[in-house]
Image (tube, rainbow, N blue to C red; front, side):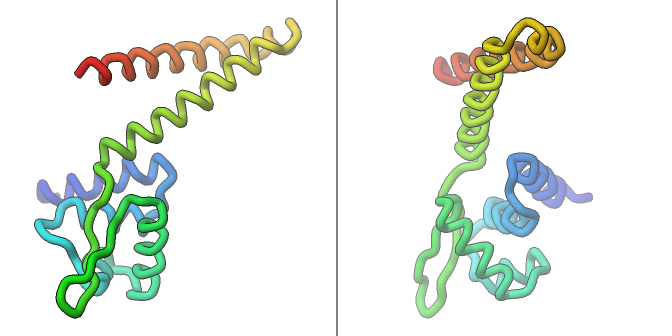
Length: 141
């Protein structure tokens, strides 16, 4: 696998992990690695999806704010609107909130339930602490 294809594959994997669908991940990766904005037809050909399917996914990505559309001559072109690091940061922050809420809710249970979820609570607490440290490190950078 050549270097660009490898990066494209890995970007898609990251986005898939965070809940992006296969086509939206493919579109984002294609645009992220392009040296210029692309038309929907070019994107469709690159990711090997039908044109109408590509347009629908582009419109979803525009609504989410990850991709922008711009008129260039007689055609619409698309480009990345949010950096991959911003998407990851947003998803990590959301995950931290979910973990904190989970930890809080487990701690409010009676002793019997808490005992059964002792391992889960330990893991959730560790993950929460890790993500808080990561946020602090990022804030300093």
